[in-house]
Image (cartoon, rainbow, N blue to C red; front, side, top):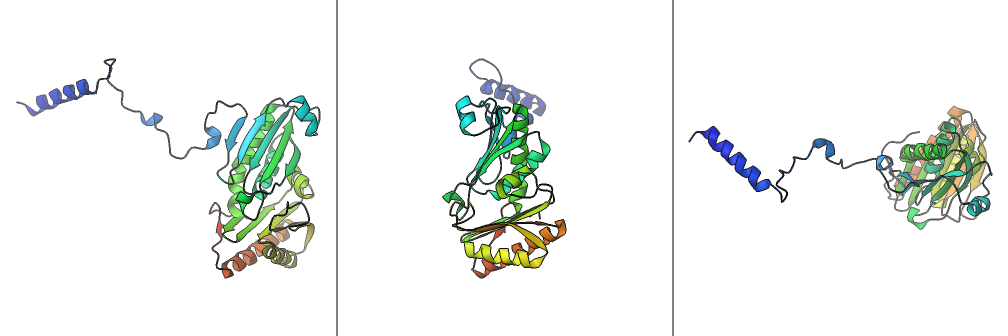
Length: 276
């Protein structure tokens, strides 16, 4: 028998075997329908209208409420002209999310209502964060949350975690309302954040930052002072000339990572992509 004829018969037999109960031949899966392993959560459809998405780091979730309940609205102290709020909430990290929120405020017609740094043991020595945006139009709140989630994936680049604690640095050439709300940053000025844990590490990093360049100390927070929620870290914020602030932050990073290594630790960037 001709080989081509045999192959044709076998193909018809296979089709008959593969028929389902309705008598239809199962269609071949389209490559367009195959779900990729890595999907950005912000692009994943959700039946819950309040859910906006997540960032890749810090157990960070973004939410929105189109029309806040009147009693809650009053207790939260939100201006009456704002009915919609955007929410960034996370378990690990505060600096990355606040820096990202600062970029979100610059890019949208929103206002920062509040920023809180809750103590969260999942973050080891550090904080979580609760950030609230407000706007007249829910689309603005949603957009602010989307921008913050995306930028959080960038700002985690200079967070270095290790078993004994963490080293965390942040820098922006132009601070806006989120950084002003959280740390008293001068709006429109260059601004840096230096964090070290355990707290003693942070003290040395702070000293190095201030000695390195001509910068002004905006705030100092220790475990019992400055709003750290008694976390085991020291946080300073600085302002000044853009180049000087950046140089100070980099110097603090170098000494912090060096001490961590001397402790037998292996500090690594959370994302593998430092941004400063």
